[in-house]
Amino acid sequence: MLALAATCLLLIGIYAEAAVGQPRARTAATTLMGGINVTGVAALPLSEADAAIAEAHAMHARVVRTEVPWEAMEPNAPEELEPRALAFADRLLSDAAADGIRVIMMVDNAPCWAASAPAAVMSTCRPGLPNQQAYAWPPTDPASFAAFTAFLAHRYGSELAALEVWNEPDQSNEKYLAGPHKAARYATLLRAAYPAIKQADPSVQVLGGSFVGSNGAFLRALYAEGIKGYYDGLSVHFYTLTIAALRAIREVQRSYGDSKPLWLAEFGWSSCWPHRHIEQEQGCVPARTQALNLTNSLREMARMGYVAAATVYKLKDSIGEEFGVFSSRGARKRSFAGIAAALANPLGRISRVTLRLRVSHGAVVASGSGPVGDFMGLEVFQGATLRYTAQFTLNRFNEYRLRLPSALGTSGLRVRAYQYFSGPPRATQSTI
Image 1: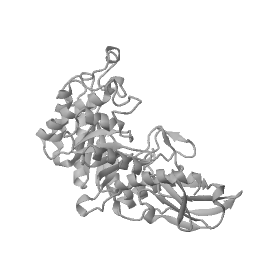
Image 2: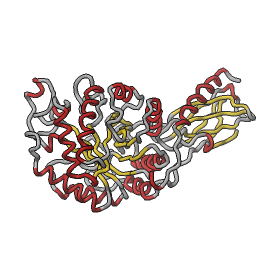
Image 3: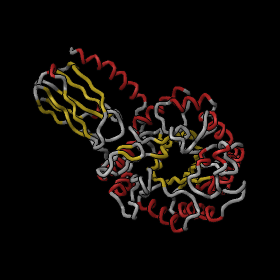
Image 4: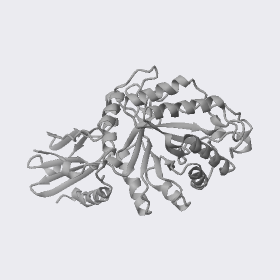
C-alpha cells in the first residue's frame, strides 16, 4: 500500500464521525419549515410588508424571518412604542397569517436608553437614527429586554414561528453584540427572556444561540454559562459548508445531552460573480450557481430530521449584498425559481456527484462536480484493495479537480467520489 494511503485511516475515522449525524427519515409531522428572510421592522410604508409576504407566498414559503430592532420599536423609553414601526409589524404579521405563513421575529439592538455602551459611545447615541454603535451593546438591565420580548409574544402569539434572541453574538466584527464576555452576557439575556416569553404565551418557541461559528467553541461557552433549559431550539447562521456545519454542531449538542432542534436562520450565496469575488466574507457565485445551491441545500436539509427550519438570506438585494432572490430593482433572479421548486417539492432530486478520469503527464486526474455544502470523499481501488483516499471541498462553482499520485499508475484503477451527506452508498464510480 502506498505511504499516502495512510490518510485512509484518518478519512475513515472522519467519515465514521460524520455518519453519526446522517439524517433520519422525515415524517409529515417533521417537515422542514422552509422560507426566507424579509425586510426588517421599521417605520416603513405598509406596502413593503404586503409585497414581502406576497413574494414569500409565491415561492411557497412556510415561514419568514424578520429583524425586530428593539431600538426601532421603543426608541425613547420602555413601553413607549413607535406607532409607525408597530403598524408595520402588525401588517407583516397579519399578512403572513392570511397566507398561512408564520414569522420568526429576531429581536436585537438595544435602544439608547437601555444600552450598556461606554460613556463615549453613549454620548453620540440618538434615538431613532440607524446604525448607531451603541445599539450593539446589550442592555444594562436584561429585564428590560425580557419585557419587550414578552410584549411581542403576548401581541403576536400563534402568528409566530419563534422569537429569536439577538443576532450573531459571536460575530468577530462586533456589529451585533459589542463588548467583552460575550457568552456570559448573551446567556444572561437568554435566561431573562425565556421565562418572560413563556409567561406571556407558553406556546411561543424561543430560539437561543444565533451564532455563526460552526466549530462549537461558542456553543460550548454558552453551555458553560448555563443556557440549557432556556430555549426551544438553537438558531445558527451558517454560510460556508452549511450541511457539514449543521452536522458538526449537532455532534456538539449530543455531547452535551442537548436534543433541541436546529433552526438555520440564515444561509445563502451572493450572486456577485464575476464583478466581485468576495462579498460579506463569502465567495461570490454566478446567478445559476446561487439558484442550484439553494435548491440542493433546502432539499438536503429536508432530509435532516434535527433541522426544524431553514430561512434563506435574503429576499431582495441591497447595497453591497447580492444574496437576494430579487434584484435591488425588484426583478426575480434565477434563485427565486430554485427556492420555489425546493419548497414545493422538498424531497425532490438533489444533484448527483459526477466523476471523470483522464491521464495527464503520467498521472490520473479526477474531476467533476457535486452538490454544495459538505465535504467530499474520493477513494481509489486496485481490485478489491483500497489504495488511496482524499478529503476535499468543491470550488465556488461546485467543481473539483484532483491529480492522483503517479505511484498509483494510470490503469487498472477504480475510483469513486461522494459527498459525505449522502455517503459512499451513493458514490459515483468510474474506472480507467
